[in-house]
Image (cartoon, rainbow, N blue to C red; front, top):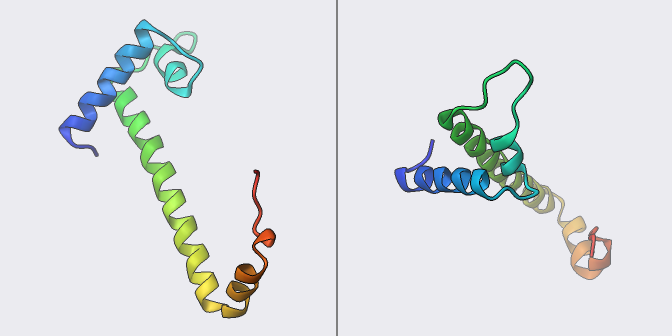
Amino acid sequence: MFTHSVACDLFDRVDERRLAPREYLLTDLVTTQLPGEEPFSEAELIYTIGSLIIAGHITTTYLIATGLVRLLQEPGRCSTLCEYPEFIPSDR
């Protein structure tokens, strides 16, 4: 799933969160244990974290690509957005 150096970096992040927890998802994954269950193994943690990273990357990539294809298929919408950028939703 990852190169050796990325996996090593993730192991380092897991160790950091065990030693100094913060209010992040990674800390929750590292420190949470369900009643009657074993804590995540190192391999399970790395696999889960890696899956979350990849899932976020793929989702964003596909969303951008799909949006661009739609704009290219409908040039009128593209022109409208260029002329009226305020039509583009923004949380800022």
